[in-house]
Structure formats: C-alpha cells, structure tokens
Length: 474
Image (tube, rainbow, N blue to C red; front, side, top):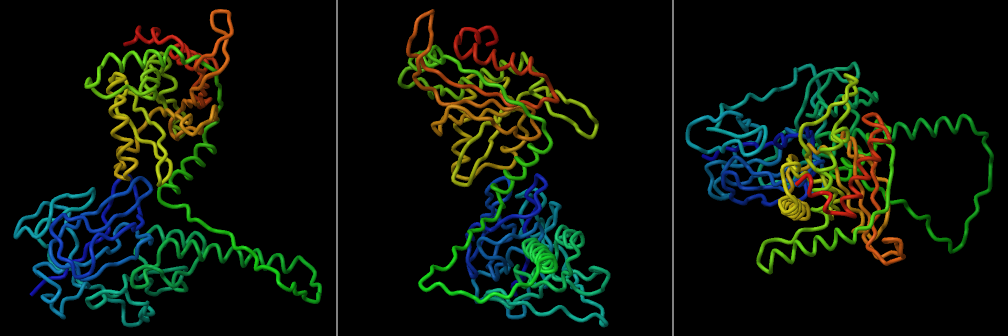
C-alpha cells in the first residue's frame, strides 16, 4: 500500500520567509521522480524551480498560481510506492505525512539528498503524531476544501493564545502571528485565503488596511457636520474609474524595500562630469579587430567601464566600503564584487561579478554576458544577486544622458553612465564633433568627502578620455 508523504516549501536561503507560486510543473495524478522540479516559485531574490525529494504519484497540490506561501507551508503530497493514481489507497491521508529529514539517512532510497538549502531527505522518517486540540477548545471553523484528487487533509492549526484568548488558529507562520499581535488583529476572526483556510500574511495585511480605513472614516464622521442634501443623478454619466492596485511583492517588492532603506539611511550626494569617449571607443574597436573573426567574444563598453571602476577603486578604496551603523564604523572591504544593473521583464536586478578586481576586461565582459542571460531567463540564484560592494549602472541603454542613481544599500557608491553620442566638443583648441558621455557618481557622504568622490570620478573620466592612463594599473 502506498504511503502519502507531505512536501513543504523548503528554506530557499538568504533569510527568505515566503515565495509566490508562479507556475505548477506537475498536475494531480502525475508520476514524479526523486528531485524532479514540481513548481516554479518567485522569491524576493530570484525565480527558483523547487525539486521534490520524493518519488511517486502527486495526490494533492496546495496553493494556486499567483498565491504566496510561507516557508514550511505544504506544497503537495506524494504517494510513495504508487505507480499511478489508482494505486493510492483510500485510507492514505496527507495528515499522516512525514517531515522531510535534514540528515542524509539510510534505507530504501525513497528520499533525496540536500537538493535545496534547508532540506533534503534520507529514508522515510517515523510517522509524526497528529496534534489534536484539547476537548474544551472548540474546533476551528471548516474552510473551503482545496481541489485535489485525494481526501483533503485538515487545515494546519496552531493552538495557542491570540490577543489574550485561547483557541485554535489556522496559521503556521510565526511572522503572520507577530504581525497580527502588533496591530491587534484577532486571527480567529479572519478567513484564510491559503490552502485549507490557511491564514496568510496577505490576509492580515488586508485586515490592517480595513481597520485603518474604518478608524479614519469614524474620525471624519465625528469631526464633520451632517448636511442633508438631495441626491443628484447625471443621466448618461460614466461610472467612476477604479484605480488599479499592483502588489509590491517578489522582485519588485524587494527593490522597493531596498531603495526606500537606501534613501532613509544613507546621506547621499552626487557629482557628475562630461567626458570625451572618442578614444575609448577607438581602443575598443582596435581590441575587437585584433581578436579576429574567431578570436573570442567581443569586449563591450560596459566591460571596459567595469575594468576602469576596479582600477579607480584601487586608488580610492573608501568607496568600496560599507557603514556598520551599530558599531559606528566604516568597513573597508578587501575585494571588489562589482554589481551591474540589468533591466528584465521581471524588473530591475543587480547581478554581481565576483572578485572583479582580479579580472581583466575580457573576463569581466564574459561574466557580465553570462549573468545577463541568466537574468533574462529568470534563473539567477540568490547568491548571484547579493554581496556586491560597488555598482555600475549603464542607464545610457535607455537613451538618456544623465541620472542621479540611488545607492544599492548597503554599498557606499554607484557609478552611472549615460548614452555615448556625438556632440560638439573643444578638442585641441578647436571645435569638433566627439563621442561624449556623462558620468555621475552617487556616494555615501559618511564614508568620504567630496574631494575623494571627485578624485574617483575624475580618474574614471581620464581613463575614458585617455585609455592609456589605465595601462599603468593593468
């Protein structure tokens, strides 16, 4: 007889506590193999395909596409030992599922290794006991059942004190419970939108908004005089337009949080300069011509600018640092992990070129191309999007000349590059048409003063105007 095992949303690392279901890769009744991807989820860092550590028949899925699940919430149940849906015994129940083990285990091999951070299975563990509420506690109200091909399992119930009263609550996330306590929201009065009536963070956020709106409405009613008016009706008038509300979650939400934190914590300043990039463009053309038709990938302008940045940071290490606000210390970092802004269909992401200070322009260019392709396909891992020490932002690809970049917290500076275009320029005392670019540096004024920032930007501009200056540091 097949044994039904429950697979929960694993810890995806980087401190992530929830994920949004983007696309299910399996249907109820499908046969899955060990470590086969079963669902595609989006976190605040990246898009991730989640593999299932069990092999068997999918008997239930929990959560619709577009819904958010906290880490530890059930994803699906699998009948291990079954070869098709008909071999699943009616007596099998998801409530008798087993927890995935974090150890390597031994045994029949029905589980996998550590396929993602925080989970992995060995042999099936012992059955867990079902926790039942005390007899003097009323059972939780039944929620709408999930659409599954096997008997639905009971809603997850956490028995404990909520707002000073005892009772069962259909919530598993400690973050959701803490948020409810902070805003004095009674969880027992909410109807969960998750699987089996599970209360999600979105449900608590909605209750907080409703409470705030009700409070504001009551205050306005008490403050404003009541004026009786005869209602008027406009014949043929169009219905009022409804504003569109777009949730700030996933990558967009993470970007919003980081930019807001940067603006609130970092006293930033910006300086900029126009530079004649004609010689840089000529040097790039010569480098690519020397490589020949089959001499390897072409060197991009962004790669050359990235190499110039690493040379400038070697001269001005103050800008390759971060501020420890708790210790009131400036921490100068030993290596340069260069982030570069990349616009994708899922929003703005900043992949990181590790140890950029040890690479030449060709190596940096190849890594930028590799990470850009992963960004476009949504396959960047959280580790490839974190740990940067300095960011290069080429907004010239959008056809604009200048900008005041927002620092990528907790870094100390960002270099912005506008479009390179023909402009009138005084060259050797005469007016000429040259390839001109605007460079802007936004920096954390806590780590350095304007002299250091100006020196860094001037060195970058000198390397752009005279690439031979860079040869001293190659």
